[in-house]
Amino acid sequence: MNYAFQIGSAGVISAMYRQDVASNNLANVQTVGFKPDEAFTIPRRAAREEDNLYSLPSNQLLERLGAGVLLAPNGTSFRQGTVSQSKNPFDLAIQGDGFLTVSVSGSTAGDNIRLTRDGRLTLDKQGRLVGASTGHPVLDDGGRQITLRRDQAVEIDADGTIRQGNSPVAKLGFIDVPDRTVLRKAGENLYTAPPSAISSKAQPSGSIVQYAVEESAVDPIRAMMSVQSAANQVGTTVRVMQIADEMMSRAISTLGRVSV
Image 1 (tube, helix red, strand yellow):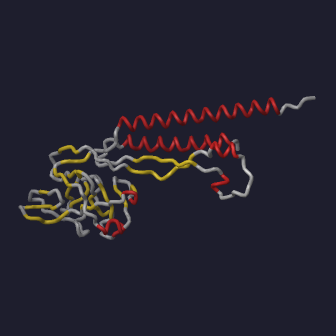
Image 2 (cartoon, helix red, strand yellow):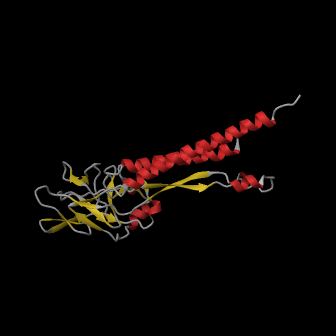
Image 3 (tube, helix red, strand yellow):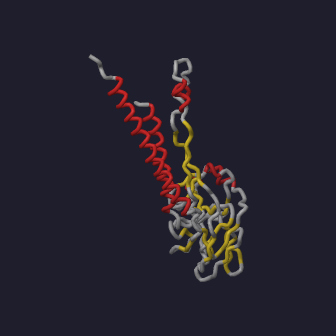
């Protein structure tokens, strides 16, 4: 394959992927507690270096041109979203660092525990505290499901202590994961983390705010610009590939012509 096509195709693929990531961020601009993703690329080394074949001859000029780019794992920006007030006592915003813990299958096994910043909660038919958008049970600081009385008002302190009738009845599983790189998005605005990170129960530096929700941390202007920038890069790279193809065709028709 033409070397320009190899570099160009890598650029097109990475730019299209960046466009997909930015478009997903833009689609979640109103998703409570959503944290935007960031697509990263790394420069690809020349084939001789990549395959550790230094004994083979190579064109140093082509190596200096580089070998395009490769996609790197996505990163997630955990910057704070805007905290907006509400009138629902089961709406909780996290101000600063920290996550609520939920169970995705009704079990409290470590591999079924997920983390979330979406603090919109409610009570199900059994009086269990669950996520309003997912129905997943919210866990306390001991990894147990929380059941509350419907006939009493609910007060929730900054550290997650739940009070009914002026008496503490439970404490939310409010934890932090200092190394955010171990977190993976699992859909439904949830994150997975290694059991060791969850069991460590690092004390969060943030606090819980009742009667409030944390809005999406996506900057819509920045997201739209990222979508447009990636689209422009696709068009520019494709045009470079077309020019390379035209030059190759011209070289073949001119230099490859047989003189009689």
